[in-house]
Length: 79
Image (cartoon, rainbow, N blue to C red; front, side, top):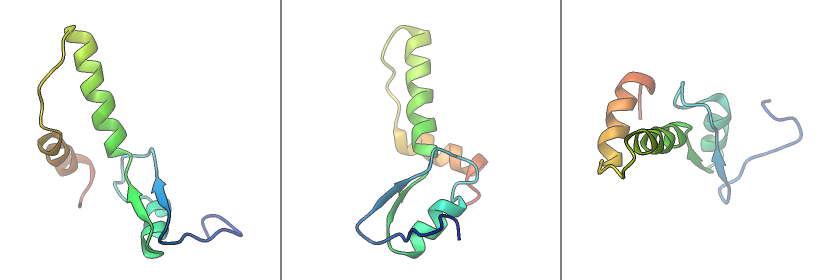
């Protein structure tokens, strides 16, 4: 198993910082047990937006869902 002596359950939220593949083995195992999963793509999006804002010196107006959709076409292979 991925984590010996540990079992996932539906009351958990499991986050994996890895963004490619979208669904890592950790997230797959957690999802199979009913846990809510969060892919590293969420952190990747947040960091990317913040980097552009710091570089530009101003807040940018971007739709997170649109950016997520674009990135997932490249990195996720599925959503």
